[in-house]
Amino acid sequence: MTVLAEAADTSAVPGGGPRARRRGDGRLRRTVLLASFLAPALVVLGALVVYPIVYTVIRSFYSTAGDEFVGFENYVTMFTNETTFTAIRNNLMWVIVAPITCTILGLIFAVLLEKLKWKTAFKLIIFMPMAISMLAAGVIFRGMFQEDPNLGVVNATVVGINNLFSDEAGYPGARPRDGFGVIADGGVIASEGELRAGDSQNFPLTGIRQSNLPDDAAQAVQPPAPGGDQITGTVFLDVVSGGGGTNGEIQDGKSGLPGIRVEAVAPDGSVRGYATTGAGGEFVIEGLDAGEGYRVALPATNFTEGFQGVSWLGPALINAVIILSYVWIWAGFAMVMIASGLSAMDRSLQEASRIDGANEWQVFTRITAPLLSPVLVVVFVTLVINVLKIFDLVYVIPPGQSKPAANVIAVEMWTVSFGGGNNQGLGSALAILLLILVLPSMIINVRRFREERSR
View (cartoon, rainbow, N blue to C red):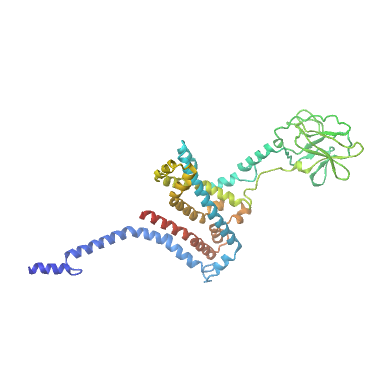
């Protein structure tokens, strides 16, 4: 009995006895095992996250060279710099437009997937841009939206559609053959002398490329005989393909120039009549006074480049083009995330609402969308974090003259630090600003994930 009592007393003493020692050894082993697993991750996290953040905060209080403490001078400079305000304004626009657009499109695409028979092909087409790097996507969109319609497919399409519905003709570089007209002020091509009703005036022109001729251009024709109140003539390209021919004469192989406006201008400068050349370049100006002299003129508007598309990469539209490229890439991500939430949703509520007489729009707005709200919030917040850090597209797509208008905080930080500014103190302050802007969205996302895990 005494031995048993002593053994019981020994095991009851804290830290005493074999059982307590075994428990202590077990805890120690678990602590060592846990530390051995966590240590590599903690070292990497400290080296790649904690240390850079701490060093950036410290560096933001030092001068350009990093050898002089300047306090909050870099932050004052940052918030008094016009380029920083442009970057913050653009980031705000990105946060409002891009995540909302991607989330809405992703929701629409995810719902459409359930209605389509070829859903796999549709999903592949929408998600495929995610496989392209931001840099490559930027190069693609910069090429597509080039202002020159000979280089940019978007402007080539716009110009082609405009030409289908417009009768304007443009012949840039045109000039009259010597002895058949003069170039007046402003680029107007006019007859050398005055004409009267019943006369004819041809305009053999050169300096026009065969490739610039419209599709409806035909063989140049002799002008019709003028009536008593008419002036007639032909405007044609005075060049024979392959060479040859007589200058100033209408011959086989010389093309008429259709769509050119021809005006009869009185001595006081007023236009008394006008006509538009036909497919063979012929024109007839009617209703002229037989007793008055006129100069026949081809206005300078005939010889401009004409409509050449929209300046997509100019300062006014550059942000829209960059955001469009971002939506093109990330709408597939939103679609896949929302589609996964849609597949896990209880469909009995939708069926019950349909039985109760709800139409598809009511089912979508009152059942589907509210049930998907947790997924929509996660997608939206993730995209907000992503656009706050946007760099690649903004750096690649804008040409030089449009870069200031498209500036964002990440690009401004890189430019100030490494892109010619060489002011890493100010660049560090910009990095801290970006971190502060990103933190709220990250905290919201972490809380959402914890709520989902605790359910």
